[in-house]
Amino acid sequence: MKIKTLLLGTSLSLIPSVTFAQCVATSDCATLGYTETFCPNGKGIKCPFGDKWACPSSKEETCAEYGFKYDCSGTGYQSGSGTPCNNKYASCTCASGYEWKDGKCEEIPVPESAVLGQCNGYAKNCKIADILYTDGTCSADVVSGKTPVAVVVYIGGDDCGQALALGGLGDFIWSTEHVDIPDLFNYSSAPTNDFDSCENTKIVIDYSYKQYGDSAYKYYPAFWKVYNYAPSSMPETKGKWCLPAGGVLDSINQNRTAIDQSLTRINKTNIGGSGDWWSSSEFSSNRVWLWYASVNGILVDYSKNYDRYVRPVIEF
Image (tube, rainbow, N blue to C red; front, side, top):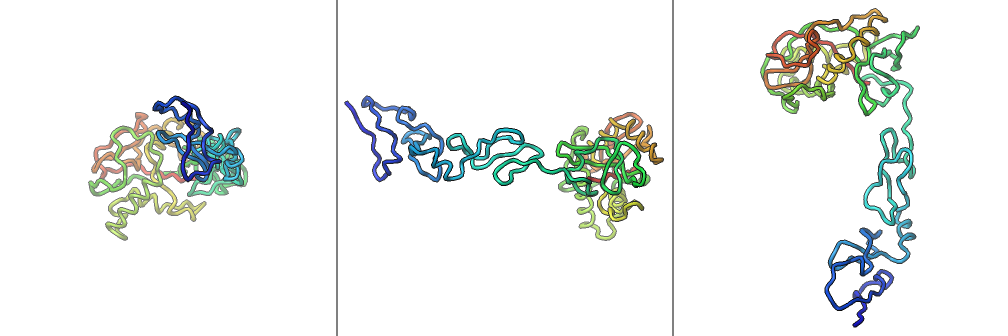
């Protein structure tokens, strides 16, 4: 016996083609002509016993009409965004370094210089141990007429970098109190993947000021020394320097020979082979991670109220 599939109240242009079958139950939507997972603007009908759809016969034109016209392939493309229609997408997800603009993935221009204190992608042009200058440029060599302000010690996959101050600020305690800082993540193992120097610093600065107001610097000296640091070559960077996170200190440790060579070229203080450097990475209410330069390791200190070496970094 032959049957014809009809759905009342549905435009005939949206009904799957006539299907001849035996009078038996079936769950094979494809047999009945339902082969799509989506129809633009709802212009289609759904298989009664599945998640497949049948779209109008002019599906390709209908998809394009509703903006599904990008195949999202080629240089700068990562994938399609959302559900495709006729293997086309309404927009695309772009690869790193590209942005969706005017219907295509366009390469994001790399700025000609950094903005010290924020990421603008310029670090893509730099490498670890480069000299960072006050004009926001970096170079492996000493450039006549330019003033060094820091040395590059970390560059992330997002083309954001951090650079080390040309000198240390001295030895200070991390905190006078044993408090587990709210919102500051506790690392139970060496935080070599923590690169959030400035976010960590901001969390502690905000917390301490909320607790103690203008007296906060007495309770969290290392952070406030860093926060108030302002090199004479760039006093406008005050408030933008940060206590290095564990991962940044680990990068300094791994690249200290090259970093020292750059510091020597500009007659500035070397990292050296000894000293215990505070990180901004917390372990617990009373302990913090340190870089022990003498043993080349990121280790846990016994107490936050010990005097340790403080040397800031700045984002760029």
